[in-house]
Amino acid sequence: MQSINISTLQNWKNKKNKFAAITAYDFSFAKLFSNQGIPVILVGDSLGMTIQGHNSTIPVTVENIEYHTKAVRKGAPNVFLISDLPFMSYYQINQTLQNTSKIIQSGANMIKIEGGKYLINIIKELSNQSILVCGHIGLTPQHINYLSGYQVQGTTEKDANRIIEEALSLEDAGIKMLVLECIPSRLAKKITEKLSIPVIGIGAGNYTDGQILVMQDLLGITEGKQMKFVKNFLLNNGSIQNAIKTYISEVKNGIFPNEKYSF
Ligand code: KIV
Image (cartoon, rainbow, N blue to C red; front, top):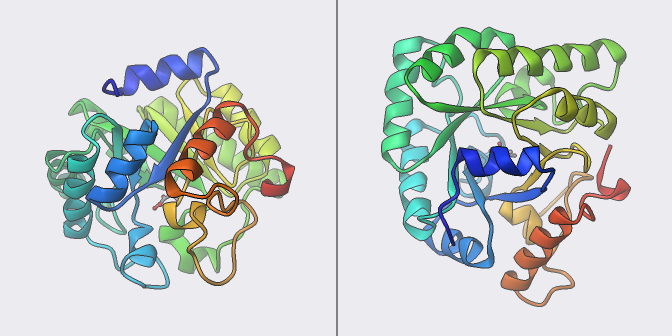
């Protein structure tokens, strides 16, 4: 696979070519996903739940993200690799720059941070240092205690307007990509149309430029209550390889997520 960079993703947005992304945390899965044609991998702090067995992403450390970023990069040298800055690792500029350096030096192309307008100064400073930043708004799992649970966001007009404003402010501050999590698809459509940067959705309907799923959800190995947007692609596809190929093709062709998997 040719190396994917931010210009590749921006061109896809401009040409309305939808793309699939997935989380990965280790060498073997990263290699397999990359070999099936996945262009974007996220080393998400979801690893706190999927790998470490915690009930939230809050315990994840910068060292954890560094470790998994290095492993994923070895398996997938050509994908566009995004890694999360974990909980409370980006509240002061110097601390953010130090933590970001470690993660970029581990192999990430871009870092992702969760939250709204209060991150503007941090985003500007990172952008001044030529760091690619991905925003993440809507449901932000690092704020789970404040949000009182994993619920759909932006369901009232007031909250929807707040999310739109946040998206615009983050783009203005310098983010080069945005993740929208668990918001109604009509709201995600508005934001995707208003922003010139690529917008990736999870539980945000099929109008976004890209989709992302947590690998364990996509492969149907997450036990317990499933969120509405989760589709088990392994169920009817026989092998992990075919499940990933089907996911990529359904996203490209706008088949996934349909109404059944959207809010
Ligand atoms: O940590 C993660 O896996 C994420 C995705 C849900 C987008 O942030």
